[in-house]
Image (cartoon, rainbow, N blue to C red; front, side, top):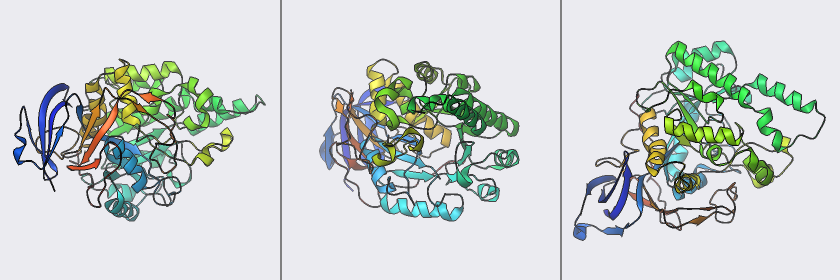
Length: 445
């Protein structure tokens, strides 16, 4: 492959901004210096006034393959991801068949090796009877085990206390949880139904309310403390839950928390205009909850920002509320929303890099990624903070061909994305070749 020299970039890394040059060689960052001679380099890029960030590591996506490829696939959604500056992802088990054993995991890795544009890892899904499969996981190869605690269907729903205790006691890998209490949701739904009025999208955060989230997330934290488990609670949405999590740096924490970009951007006020397009589980809640999440990023109670990218077809979404599936396509525009938060003064660009690059690498023990360091893989994204991006259904790259951000203009533009030193997005199109992306490797911490 050709060597690449990126000159005059403002590198955002480890809490600092530096205008320096960076050279890519043999898939990795070869040199970072004030002025690198370009004469021996094949490709030279002038990145003056642009930010060079580590590629985003998205710890929660649903790419829908196998079995649900009418919604999306590893090929289509990973291409949207690199166009959004995401260079690595960790994908969830609720596909068809569910990823609940070693053979299903291996099948996904084989698909990704052929088709993925970004680096990849896959969760094993917990069931009430696959503890032996969980115990057999290799922590240097598997990102974690996903536990749906009261908010899923089929064999991925784990509510039996004995099964949950076994998972928290025995798992050799990080436990990640979707926390919403099924009984609380059922009671809330009955209460709304008893009003004998038509149920609409505005009832979604009432049915799946903060008490449903708190009841489940507090149970997960209780189990983790009891068994000294490594726990990561996904997509926190409520102010009430924040007291469960320790503030401060992610290093050394056994229990961590994540927020997702759509919960940081939208609030319940947006149901009026966005409707089912922003129906997701856990639900988007009040403006007060959203602002509390933004503040928790500053205190360190929220350690990681991810997407929970979960595409459905527009036909599936544009039905009555009760029949519309929950989930949004997000990977192409996630980083853009965070750049807009920076523009609005809600967070700093250094904080964004910490939450979407550094902290996922630290929490999961991802080897040689998540930082701009000599010797690390060249997973990089070049951003122009002075050029805006108008988002529309028409220019989205998702297989489902729609975006919840339709009509919004964000203050930033993704100029280029590199995966393992290869240019995979040039600002206008993806340039993916087979075999560029790699499976993520982990320290096994």
